[in-house]
Image 1 (cartoon, helix red, strand yellow):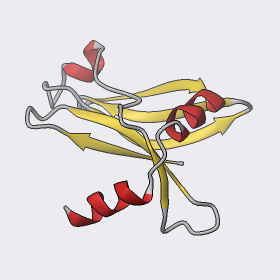
Image 2 (tube, one colour):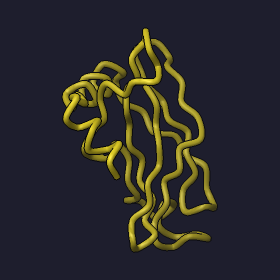
Image 3 (spheres, helix red, strand yellow):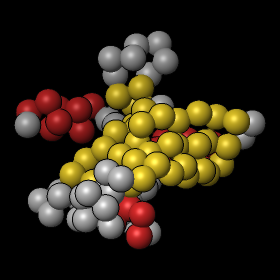
Image 4 (cartoon, helix red, strand yellow):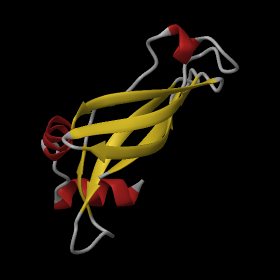
Length: 107
């Protein structure tokens, strides 16, 4: 499972998640359509980048909890957590099929 950030035309940074195949990590097997983290709090929207930034820098699993350390508004450091099973179930509910891969490759 990997996290990534994306930025929109308004310079708002959000965090997404995707899953690679364990046997062939060149293959993306699932990718969430929605973000798992987006700027909402003052420390994510008021700082060097006032448009809103959540920029993942590290993640770890402690027991059954998934923790994401991230930068907020390019000024602060924060951590978000969620049950690991919920994050895995969320991303795996959006499998990438052969049709989807062809569309992505054609861009």
